[in-house]
Amino acid sequence: MEKQTPILKDKVLQFLIESANWEGTIEIKSEDIPTDLGVTRASLDRILTSFEKQGFISDFHTHSATRDIFSITYILNQEAIDFMEQGGFTFQSHIVSMNLEKLKAEIEQLKTDSPVRAERMTTIVNNILSSLQILKFFE
Image (cartoon, rainbow, N blue to C red; front, side, top):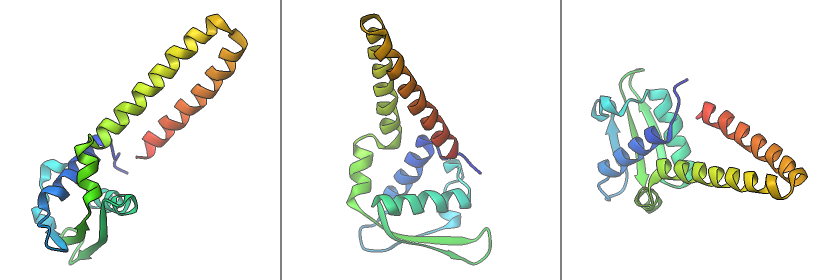
């Protein structure tokens, strides 16, 4: 299964925005999807399904002629543009990382002030970081 990184999701969402005509349903044929987008059809389906759940697109459908010849239809929602204007998935991922680094620094300070509480906090943070690594693996 192809890893769906924040960069890949940003590229796909930007492509959908650039393909929009704002006149209703948008159709994109498989041959119109740039190869440098670097996404398989299966991964594209998963990403677009996720985008629909997040409210970036609606009425998403895949129409297949063959395994390699298909088209997708969707309606682009304003939320997609707003999200990209705020930095997209890459920025969101960066913010989470920065917040975790800040928390780590605060725990280091707490270790000198209150070692027992710091140890508990360290365990909690390590559990959170482990969970995030597992989630990144499945993206």
